Length: 445
Image (cartoon, rainbow, N blue to C red; front, side, top):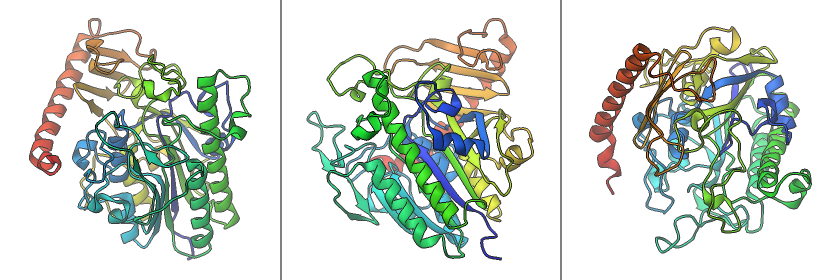
């Protein structure tokens, strides 16, 4: 039967905090299209990125593995010799393509620039966007890392060929390309996978005046953040409208999340101010991008599948980006037995209220290691400021009562602290050994 297998759309934002979405609690600006997406399905309260920085989080989303098992455990360089996600690692796009799906990506890649690591080597039939970590939204030039280290480099591509759209706002280009692709493929019977990794609200902080005009009362730093997210929200609305127009909305699983918490990096400012940026919000959470406290890894996340998922649900069970690979492939009818996976199929958790399939989730970032088990979260060497000494050697929280990780329970709950510390150290030792034996030699250059 036509359209029997579901299609898939993933929206993936960049440096968007837990509190930077109105359906997640933001009160100073609205994201009506994403709010409507939440109302049509599930809003997650305890959904995680697998890393507090961009490249590793993207690798987990697309591979169903912890970042280190995918071969990407740190932010990747943006020069044209930069390696990244290697094609021998199965991805959502490569495996759905193998199952007969049409595949496309429009937006930020940041999983390697060398030819073997580009999107078309990972199963994307069509793609448009950039491959570094950030670009100027209008010139599409990668400036980060200048200061005598490397020259600026133009970074806009279409199906592997460099293309120029100087003066066009990148968020709108992404939406335009995605809608055009859907208008071509959605009338056909083939199922499809559309990956839309918007780079907003990652620096540089750029937005057209018409979006800024929507928020005249906000302070400048928050106003530009709201404007950038409003452009994303409009894009989400246009893409969902295209799905509906072609009769493909009901049997399309739409997933949304951010890649990591809000950035406090000074390069968010446009005026040379050297103090930390505070335009993004992690809501009540502690921490931000680069940190393994909740603000760095707990994400705004939504999932909608009108044909199967009840509307207006709130799911507080634990899930993570690496669960999307096994969940989507299972929904597409694939057997998971052939894959090396850390993620789990969470479809029953979403549709039927089943408990989380995870006993524990782990994270690493530099010297930081963290683990969540049920309501308990332990952070080892947790950092709130990059490059500063750890805030605590060990910080234990009960997230049921303290989602902001304000109270350290390591001394009042010593048995739980010891159990989780041992588990985290075993996991960390295992992934370090895996990295050294499997991936470090590939990235040595």
